[in-house]
Image 1 (cartoon, rainbow, N blue to C red):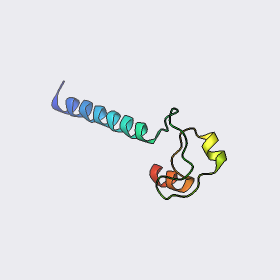
Image 2: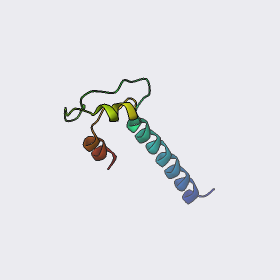
Image 3: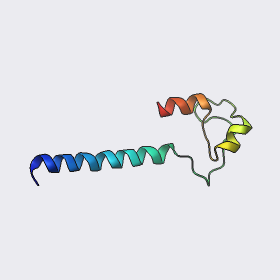
Amino acid sequence: MDVLDRASALETQQTEVALANHLAKQAPTMEQESAEKCIECDALIPEGRRKAIKGCQYCVLCQSKREA
């Protein structure tokens, strides 16, 4: 394995770790109760959203901004 192969393998590993960390932060935990108000902007989160997305903590607008 030459230097470029090792660099490529390291880059792939770091990308996978970064992606896993990002997804872990984004994914709502099923154990966590959905918030009634967005933790970012304090807007009310509709009951339908709270039921559909267990553990949601953000309104649609703030969640969209986080995912962008």
